[in-house]
Length: 257
Image (cartoon, rainbow, N blue to C red):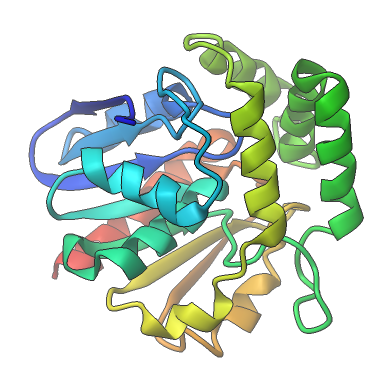
């Protein structure tokens, strides 16, 4: 399985990984701004956009597929589910990843006894059940949930839908697997094994990846950099592109020295 990827710009390498149900077109305008200073590679996750899906059910297999088409060395930027893949890829191939920037991402996306600042498990279960009945309607609901409470929510939702329609719809089996990964994966205990700097950027109105999780992450990543974008929900790079761009550029400058 070779994933679809496209590259623009010249300079040090960046890899951009999108979230569940999305595709790499969601980065279009944001990537164009980054390409003034970096060589940007956008990857469609398995079964999303133009990428095939061969039934891989483990996060490791998805990460290996991303590594196969990524540059030899790069800073990886991941949004939501894409951030989990960045973390997993860095654990698998530390020599290839110089740093990670997480946008609205988590090492574990569902709540637990010792992890309260996350999505309720029942919410994710409802999406999994609904997906079996109507995957398109379920995806529409998820898009709306990502923009909930954000500044410019209506405009951003319209923009997001327009961007996604530039590529084929995600495959239902890939959507199902992606939700199962969000429900089951827990990378917290492995965070201390990361051999690269990390930056975590959250929206203060995000209900899927609450910004309060950033404080809990410090126990595994005491040197990590944390930022909160005021007025943003689950897609700060869409609702607040300039502020997110500036935070990302600052992180990249720090990583590259």
